[in-house]
Amino acid sequence: MSKDYYKDLGVDKNANADEIKTAFRKKAHEHHPDKGGDEAKFKEINEAYQVLGNAEKRKQYDQFGSSFQNGQAGGGSYGQGFGGFNGGMNINMDDLGDIFGGFGDIFGFGGSSSSQRGPEKGRDLEMSLAIDFLDAVHGTETEITFPHLKKCSVCQGSGHAPDAKITSCSTCKGSGRVTRMQRTILGAVQTQATCPDCQGEGKKASADCKHCHGQGRIRETESIKVKIPAGINQGESIRLAGYGDAGEKGAASGDLFLRIRINAHANFKREGDDIHTQTEISMVQAALGDTINVDTISGNFKLKIPEGTQGQTIFRLKSKGVPHLHGRGQGDHFVRVKVLIPKVLNKKQKDLLSQLNL
Ligand SMILES: [Zn+2]
Ligand SMILES: [Zn+2]
Image 1 (cartoon, protein in one colour):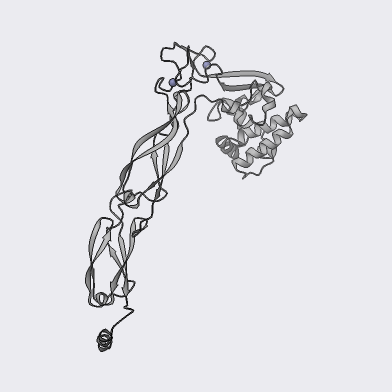
Image 2 (spheres, rainbow, N blue to C red):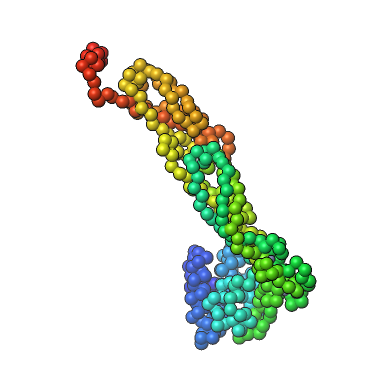
């Protein structure tokens, strides 16, 4: 028989994952059997959330309705959790954990069940690095110093004393996880949890590493050399894989992201990979033409000013800009010329100018 899970949770068919979660929490509170709620209703809500709270199951449900749960149990992607509904129920403790703190006893969970997932990967870290304009343009190598949790060098992150005897955990038989089946007012509840004896490692050591007190990692300030690639721009990040926090008990380390800030330059302005500058020429240079020296990021450039150059003309120096960070080539350099009109002229200069009679 088909059920309307959306109606059970009181959400719209187009509700997003957050809305579904919020609705579930609200309803679950409302019908909490411990607080005198209706047990059957509570079960219904849980069932609805098992499906709608899971993107894949929700898609299937939208397509086929709930009737598939009996017929196709055990097959396809719903797996065991879905088929098990007739007798028991699988509870996603991530979603229930914090609101059902008081419920813990029934489920056989103590407190923060959601974090019981075995050794966690280390956190990613971010720091900003200010570099000079021309270093960003040409690339450079610099040393950075940063604090992070580093893998313990004595135990290589395991947290075990080097001479400790390692044995397979008898509680979980080395799997790191334990399954519990309990009869509750909601029926049989099967829960999976990280093994409390070995914290998910599957093995136990006779002694902890003294250096890191069994944590496998230690807070340290580290200095490393970093290559800054030519062409990097404001706000871009360099990822230093593995230089974030070390993971718990030898789990993978996070990454360190270096966010680049570029100091302004007195002369050069950068837009993307193009450079913009201004230069001044005299009225005579503009009228008669000349060759002038222009500073570019790669040194001096002789720029030919053709005769009759107007004020605010922009000259493009092709490929004299910043090297592209991704791919070959460089941006351009644009020079805007300002034509200076003399403010003070002597009598002779004035006479000469008026003779031009332009
Ligand atoms: Zn250690
Ligand atoms: Zn264990």
